[in-house]
Every structure is written in structure tokens, then in C-alpha cells.
Image (tube, rainbow, N blue to C red; front, side, top):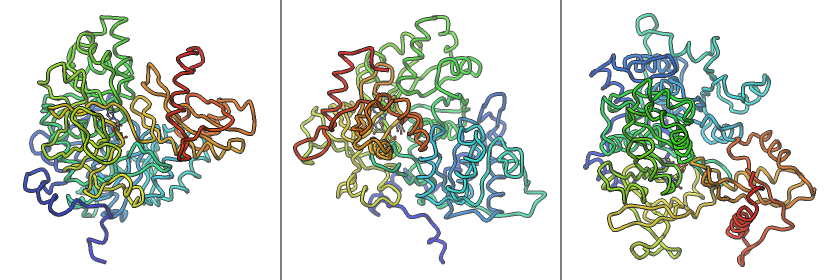
Length: 554
Ligand code: AMP
Ligand code: DBH
């Protein structure tokens, strides 16, 4: 077998575009791990990660990730292999990520909120040789479930954070200095091969994986750094789930490491967790989803003295879901920091409002594409460009926008056009300056305050219930989350309780944030003229119900 056969398959950019991206200096043939090597040259003692009472310098981050990479290589893992990783917001997340990149092992970094179904779906798609998880996850709380899950994942090597034994992650990160053990070689995949898989919010029955190369991802990070003006002075609070594309790359933790700044880890984005960390570590940059922004504003409104805790904060990035203008306009006056809107996707395209933009753009738009080579087309239902200022479906391609989900030819045929533009499923309006405003969605997805729920995935799980014959999941408006989910069901058993249904789904391994917030029983689901479930009608119905019966929205 030649070496190249060992690389994971993915849909490449056409040669002409790849050449353009290289010629323009976007793709530099460098692995993502180059940022660590560079910082180790420049300032190995500088703080890279602050996690609870622990501090990791760049030298320590580099050495720890190299030790784990070497230990994995010694175990026979390397280029062509994949790993499934599920860690909370702890320093080990980055140590493991860099270790896997250094050893050429492509990870899927599952969110900590993911449950058995997501893990098994990822495992089925990548057949990982390695699983790295945390004993703090509820999946490992009950003995027994744990081994059944691990058997189903099928990885030959399992390392657990919080386990002090032979298979404890800490041990693998800490043991084996170059000096006292036989040397072993390891290397990242070439820069134009898959570095890792990003997670899609999804709109289908199975969660899809997005292959990201070193070249394209590193470009997105470097370009984000230019726009957001990161530098060694940057002290970034990572309060969103660390693997998410936003806090990882827009510019996120990787942007901070590339710039030589420090990442402070928060367990969650709530004000109680974040405000003291901001004050203690003089944080000047963070990113949030809109529901967290509302909590921060409430906290600041109810007790103006908390603002002193936010004194060091210069820039608050908000993205993941639509930020209401009324909320946007309160940020600067109440939190005392600048707002930047970020409209991005794990598939690629990221839009930013710029730091020098007037309020008119920062409050009312979701920014404009970060790269001069992002190509955006806004098309009507027939696939023709809409008139300027008219809403249409966002199609895009560019130097960091993927060209196909991993091993999903049928789905790719639906979401890519013949020019290789990806249709994100967002309905947007573009102004004369190229700024986008998100006005709606085509894809069958609920955006629950930034957490994406593929309707089909939950519907399929509901249909496993013996008494449910039809199910449709739709979004309903919610003042705190923007959207919540409502399941319309047809059942053979009147009086099925929401509590019992949620328990049923949870036991099937559905993640908590995907459990329907509300259930409505119907005699039959309404159909459109072409025989599809009329989701628009269902959304209107639940919105109407909520408006008329505010007390029943629980
Ligand atoms: P994902 O596929 O999980 O990476 O989610 C990306 C999707 O999140 C986008 O296609 C949008 O639907 C949504 N999104 C992200 N940022 C924003 C934003 N600032 N405003 C509105 N929607 C957003
Ligand atoms: O929602 C997202 O996926 C997202 C939001 C902001 C994203 O991927 C990003 C920035 O990079």
C-alpha cells in the first residue's frame, strides 16, 4: 500500500481553485500544529491555558501533546487513523487535540452535551481506533452502561480523563520523555489532507461530519485573527463548548494560540461562572450565543456593580443564532464592551461585523464574509439570483468552505450545486456593502439558542415509541432561547405524558438539548398539496397557541 492510500478520503477543491488559494497565500502547506512550534520558539514560558487552578505554558502544551502523540504512535496509531473524543471544557481538550494532529490521527470532537446516539453515529462513520472520554460524563456514571457503550464504539484503545489507572489520560499525557524511552516518530497529515472532522448542526437523520484540512482551517483562523485583531495581549474566555467551531476557530482558542495569547476555560457561559473568571484573569475577549448574552444583560441590569467585574472585557462576539436587535443595542451600554456579530458555520463560511463598523451594521447585520475569496450567491427557489435587497437562499464556496460531508454522496448531491457552492439552508438578505442579515431558514432544523437540532433525527427516535404513529418536530418562538422545539405527534394511546416521552427519548440515547420542549397531539398531521408534512402550518399553529395561551408554554 502506498502512503497516500492511508489518507482519509474527502471531497477536494478543484485544482484551479486550490491553485488560486495557494497563490494568494491562503493555503501555506503548514499543519495546524505549527502554531505551537512557533510560540515555543517565541515565548515558551507564556501562558497558553488557564483551567481552574492549573496553568499551562506554551512549552507545557507543546511537550504534553508531544508526549501523548508519541505514546499513541508507540501504540501503533498514526496517519489514516481516527479518534472519537468527548471532553468538557478542560485543558486536556486542547492537549489531546494537538496530540492527535501531531500524530496524524483525525478526531471527531463530540460535544459534551452529546449522548450515546451521537457518539455511536460518529463511531459508525469513522470507525475510530481510539476513544478519549471523561469519567465526569453522565454516560459513565452508571457502571455497566459504560462497557456496553465502549464495546459499541469499537475502539481498540480507550483513554479516560479522571481515571488514575493504566488507561488514564493523565498518564498518557505525562509519561515517556524523549530521554528515557525508545524514540518513536510521528507526523501530522500533509496540510492538504483531513486534519479533523468538524460537526454539522445537521438537518438529516444522521449527524454529518465535515472534513477540515490543515490548510483551510488554519487560513480561517489566521484571517479571523486579522479581523478581530488578536495578539499576545489577547486573553480569551472560552465559555461555549470548546469543540464548537465558533470558540475553536472564529478566532476562538486556535486564534489565541496562533497569536500567542491565553485561553481561560469556563465550565459554562452563565454569568456566575464567567464574571469572576473575567475579573480574575483580566479577560478581554469572549464569544457567546444570544441566550447567554441575555443572561449577562439581566445580571448587569439587576446589579450594576457586576460591571466592574467586566472592566477588562473589550470585545464580545455573538453568534450561533440570530441576535435580536433590541438585545444587540443593550450590549455596549450595559456590559461596557464592543459587540461583534459572527454568522458562521462548521462547514466553512464565517461572516463578521468589523471592529470599525458603525452601529448600523453591528446592530442590524450579521456581518460580511471574512475572505475576499468567499463567493456568495443568494438565490430564489428557481436557483436564480434574487434582486438586491431581496431575501434568498445562501450559497457559498471559498478557501475554507468544505466541498462535501464525509461519505454522504446522496446528501452532498442535494446541498451542493454544480459549481460546488454549498447551500447552507439559511435565508439571508445582502446589502449593498455585502453585509448579510439572516432572515429565516430553509433547512429542517431547530436552532435552540445556538444548539442545532435536526428535526428528522428526533422524529425518527419518536417513531420508535410503540404508541406513536406520526411525528413532526418544529420550532416555536421562545423569548429566552429564540426558538424551542415542539413535537406534534399522532398516537394510539391518548394521554401520553411529555415526561414519559422525554424519558423514553433519553433512554434511547438522545441528547438532553434535543428533547422536545413541548408535545402536541393531533388526530393526523396536516399535509401540503404535494403530500409532505405541512411544517409551516404546524409552526404557525404552535406560535398561535403560544400567543393565545401564554401559561401553557412550559
Ligand atoms: P452549524 O451547522 O451547527 O455549524 O450551524 C451553522 C448555522 O447556525 C448557520 O447555518 C445558521 O443557520 C446558524 N447561525 C450561526 N450564526 C448565526 C448568526 N449570527 N445569526 C443567525 N444564525 C446563525
Ligand atoms: O453556529 C455556528 O456554527 C457558528 C457561529 C459562529 C460557527 O461555526 C462559527 C461562528 O464559526
